[in-house]
Length: 426
Image 1 (spheres, rainbow, N blue to C red):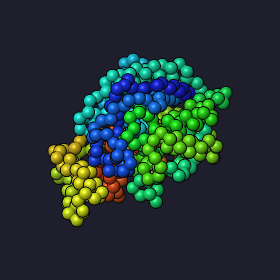
Image 2: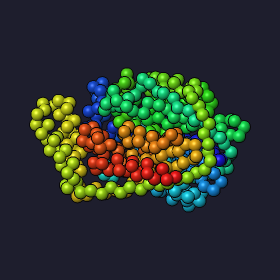
Image 3: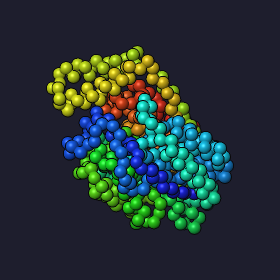
């Protein structure tokens, strides 16, 4: 197996709107101190750049097939943008479109790069064109620098910094998976980390472009080891620092990044993993339902209305039930039909695999994918599209994320089951 690595800076031109925390109704999850500093509802305008946003490109080649992984320090990436990137790379670099995977870290303090769930926001054409051009450059650099490699896998516990925000005492992915790729001369080429946490230390009052504590974590480990570090975010749909952070400023981001990084410096139980081949499978899934005929959605509305009638107006629960949960149920019911196609990607390298999903997948569903078998499985959420939350049916209608999701009851479970079935065939 051969591999190569490239890193490009992808800072936006200021002024620019900022992704994340855009609707006042979602500010119910913010602290009183944060709310006191919050801007008016709508897009924040960035006034500066706290830390460089990066795009890491990893190329694997088995001599017959290529696989490119682009990892961007932005909040989200829409399917249409990924399709445009693939088209651009096909036309400019002769890259097979199905050999391109685009993931993002999901910072809530990056530039506005999406158009919203109902396409109500402007598309950042100039920014994405810059990204496409840098992708093309990275492809050429990676192809030029391909070298024979071998790899080592390790898995570290991560404690004390984040948890399951819906069920604080229950399970979440509390580890950091690590793949270190070396040249034939045993020189480290890059290190790929897979953790699962919303990078949301910096709150709504922040107006500086930043990759949040991911930037600190990456820089901290690189400073000690000298090895470039890339981070792919996993099943963070219900995992965040919300209940454990002690502040919302850059000092807290530093505490998080360095605190987590310190747990990852020493080897835990490293093993060699084979890089034998590239076998990939795109798993397509179709979602199509009529909200007005959806029994679960109608029952949820009825349940919420009954609960609201018992609540004290102005209470936190009343606001959450009316401004978020019932709001989103009614928003779905206002639509004649909800229909979209989504896709996941499994890439098997022999000794490990990467599974990329286009959503904020939750812990239960993410665990199902990681536990397909004993092979180390890196889960790259927020990849190749953004279908919002994927919530398991056991928590559907119970947790915040299940009201915002575009999936109907049971759809996300069916999608994951299909991913697992197709992965087992590779």
